[in-house]
Length: 339
Image (cartoon, rainbow, N blue to C red; front, side, top):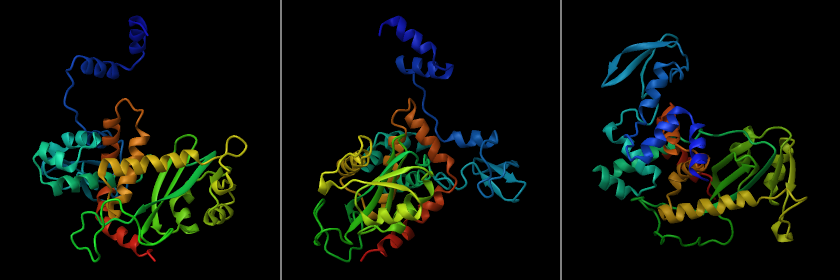
């Protein structure tokens, strides 16, 4: 591509993107401002009251430096941060830098060193943000859908109250085959790129686990490609879904040239490699948050402004703080399925 072609391509970009490109090329990139996005949307009535979703609210003074609003419908007040992971957060002036470092997947030790914050603070911020990704980019599945489960060995990484002897990083289960020592993650994708990674249960999955993970998101008329697991057969029958079964033990890898589960198997490999190489394994308690992170990174990997898009998603969810507070409860519910 020569100069004139590049210039012509740039001229087709929106004016804001042209200015951003000029700034990046000249090294005059301004400091990114992520957390003001929700404030602007509230002022412009693009998002509703975090309590009742009504758009009938008005400014009602300030609260500790943030704008406060009063809702005409539910008669409750809220700020620009209410319900989001930013609510009650100290040192908000560090948030923009933290989000950049997080997007670069820097370690907690590196973030602690750069921002001069406590490692526990860096850890808490990470999981508040990741809790906000749970419902983002969760589109319905349609067409040819692939689904299969993968397993992570149960991990108590970081726990100071172990009731059993710790194992070395990696390691293996003391039990043969699929057991309660392993965490089942149901991974689903379709040919348009919609994706879901749900931490389902300890040990083997059942029909209800599949229903809870993806049951409400499959469009009618879709075709479900799976392995020979009997639970998928029961699920497909219950929801009147056409199922194509591929059994690797019979060397059935592709049927009719289009039905396979190669995309979902590739996701298994990529997410496990990401978890092991980037974080050296993660605690089972926080595994769903890391599945959320991987999914969001994949969803915005082709975006020109991936950092901005991801940051915007994190601040738009007014239920994220509640999800963060439920992490321990949800972990206990998961462990209760162990047998």
